[in-house]
Image (cartoon, rainbow, N blue to C red; front, side, top):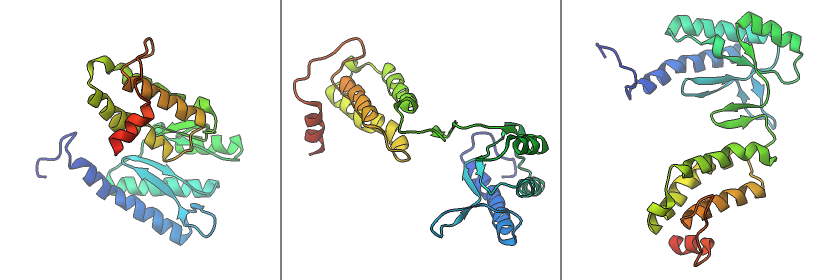
Length: 221
């Protein structure tokens, strides 16, 4: 610790979490004192003021100019006390049912840009109607891009089965944990897995000696 920490050091994320805990405490104290109002969840749920993932934070609050200014003041105090500065030029403001004039006023005050729905956050589409097949195209493209790096014909039967279950399945699990996929999307992804499992690709097909579903059942049993 005397010589500092280099970039990429495995200890760095833990130190950042410890330092960022001060921001959590500051926001909680602001909520209790009435200086900042988060979003109250229905059915007597908790009040949420922010969601944090590593060094990426989403602040949630009821819309008012004073509420937003108090949040900026909290961030300035956090910067002075911890040395961690929020990059406002890379931050965006999103408003739901808020007049554009008020968004522009706050964006000018905070030096942020105005965002619009839909947008991608941590690989997920926020504000999109995931019941539409078109919004699932990035997942299908990831499947196809991942398969393009592998040569199914050069892998053994067991190797293809392992990749289908361990790798390809995990690509969609992240999305399925948040959204309910349309039936057409599930069939498309399953078709891609089935084609790879049989050793084929987009240009050629392989003969299936037994059903793909039966292969998986036999392996599971």
